[in-house]
Amino acid sequence: MILNAGTLVTMNDEREVREEVHVVVEDGEIVDIADGYASGDDVVDARSEVVIPGLVNCHTHMYALPIRGAPLSVSPQSFYEALIDIWWEVDEAFTMEDARLSALGSCKEMLESGVTAFCDNYSGPNTLPGAMDAVAEGVAQTPIRGMIAFETTARNSRDEALAGIDENERFIRESEADYDRVTGHYCLHTLFTNPEEIVRECVDRATTDDRPVQIHLEEGLVDVHKSIEEYGERPIPALESMGFFDADVIAAHCVHATDEEIEILGENDVAVAHNPYSNTNNAVGIANVEKMQEEGVTIGIGDDGWDPDMFETMRTAVGIHKLKQRNPSAFDNAVALEWATIGSATVMGMHDRIGSIEEGKRGDLVTLDLGPNPVLPESAPYYVVSAASRADVTRTIIDGDTVYERGNSVLSVDDEDLDAVGAASAELWDRL
Image 1: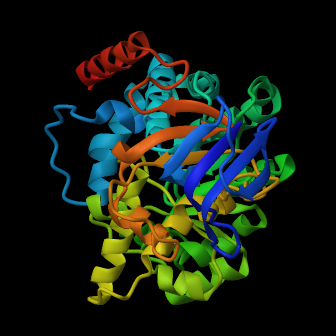
Image 2: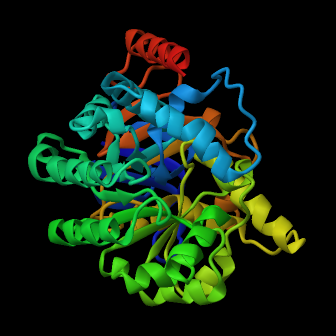
């Protein structure tokens, strides 16, 4: 593939923005970025568009898709109540087909939104064993890159938690090789839903398989209170005492982490998946990303299953961090684009392959039509963050192949598939 780009936002180490260039992709890899436009019938024409790296969503829950629009009668007054009254009920009601179809529908939406890679955590205890195969099947029907895991929890029993760990191990060792772009990892729901025994077992399996462990960490105050009650200290030092950080850890949220706890994260090279839209929607608070940046913590951005439009997630990050300091210049908008590209790729351990447009990386690109205003190199990243939306995505490209083009369906997904997704959601609502 050869693509002509009017404005190319590379997100390389220099955060270089180039004008009037063409990108050459061979066998899925970017082999050249050269000045000037190329000619030929097969050249992709984005001369009037902005080209950015494929967006990366480093924390999502695809199984949340069927709950949109559900006629739920509950009105949770806290994050913990939302878990008990909504999400844990959903978990128990999920079937294998729900797992497959929610993954398929979510991947279709992500690709339409310019997301080319994601990290997902699925929870459906009544679909064990085999849940990860169902999720992987839904993902692999599309061309997207996905890291998937079963969300281990002992909230019902120790055996159920071990079954979740077994599921991740089984998928990694037995099924993963069947997929080109789907890989497994490990996940613990939270510290307050898993005892020390399960934490240590998960770390042992993850380090043996050389895979990261993702955990929801201090998303709500319940995590903090339960940890102090059980272990006499806050979650992050408690986990450190358990050897949790011997694994490669992706910590989602960290909303209530103290300065001292963030220092521990930095010392242990923990990566953080920041979820600004979810945190505001769940009313849990605003993560101290400023301290995280000070401590050199790698930060990526995720939607936590709420909104596939990563542009909205970026804008939410900009808004809340400015509002927190009551200063319209307190947050650099372009940082949000870093989090959604090279930052999230680094969180997922994929920064050597994706997250920026450079020679030697995969040809994952997104073309954007931002309208009639001029796009200047010095302001292009800011323009993308402040003005773009999923509606402006004209193409999503993975490994040099156009897998979505505005006005057409995502590659390998048709109306019959979408009808099945909707029907499964309706049936799930009836069970709830």
